[in-house]
Amino acid sequence: MRLHAHACAFVLLCASSLPLAGCGSSSPAAAAADREAAIVVTAKGFEPKALTAKVGQPVTLVVTRKVERTCATEIVIKDYGIDQPLPLDQPVKVTFTPTKPGKVRFACGMDMIAGEIAVQ
Ligand SMILES: [Cu+2]
Image (tube, rainbow, N blue to C red; front, side):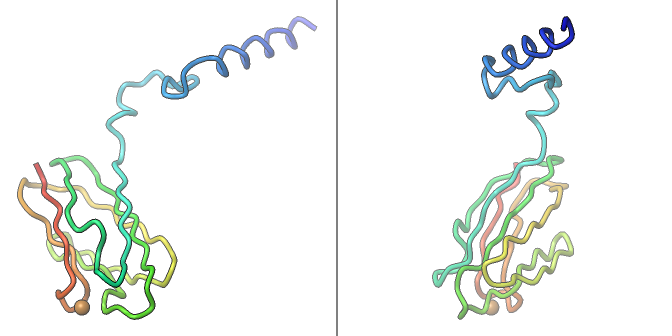
């Protein structure tokens, strides 16, 4: 009986705290975790085609191709040896960690449709 009451109090406490504060996670490192950026491939190309990232901080691009007719059926990030096929309507995760400041280009297989990640 005592145990049960305790469990209830715990649930209430968590539910009433701010969502951002989390429940049981007190590590400040969690805030600096993986950054995810959603990119869609449309008739106009990659959207957005300008992103930012930080040196040493992993970036995950979640790329979804939304159009059947495009030459961007893959995403290539030459600087980081990435070449990922983009199946129609399926989010594809591409993760890399920028090692130096500057521009990182991402493009289709023929390097025609492209975008840039500004690394600081
Ligand atoms: Cu192309």
